[in-house]
Length: 77
Image (tube, rainbow, N blue to C red; front, side, top):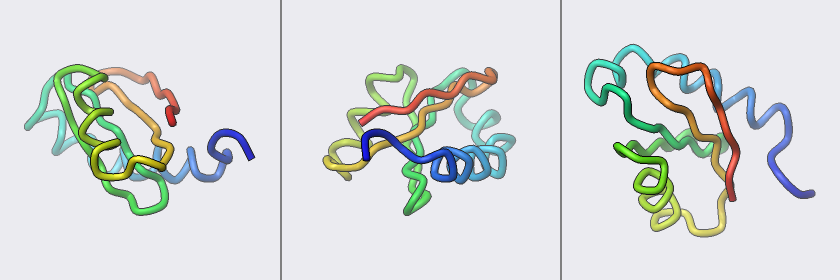
């Protein structure tokens, strides 16, 4: 299968919504990258930095990316 399933993306969105309020206060305008299976998350001021941190920890995983203070979500491998 290529890409994350709809249920995996929904799981990441649910986790993001649980964390959003706390993360917005701590990391305004940052990006959040979530592994929907472990629910591990990584933040960074740029999408590249957040993804780099996530891929260093889990090089083979796919992630769902969010921008704090935005309703945009992306998936990346």
